[in-house]
Image (tube, rainbow, N blue to C red; front, side, top):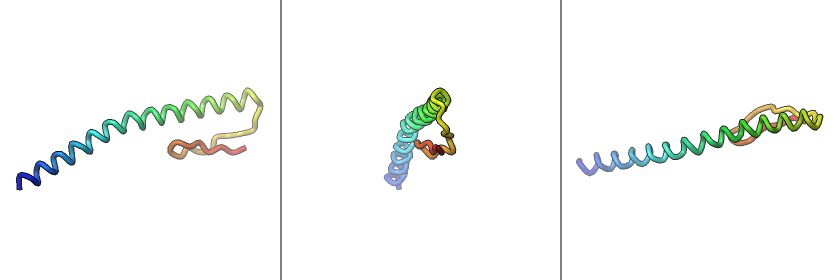
Length: 65
């Protein structure tokens, strides 16, 4: 029984470590997508382009022109 307890401990520890690393990456990715949407909107206004952001899907921006 003790081996099972340690196996669960190490599995849980690994999951927590992966989540902690992934959290930073996901946060930076979300910030970059938001910044890209602001830059895109400013670019469309400056160049008088009729395009609008419709939706965000993970790391994609859906645009209607």
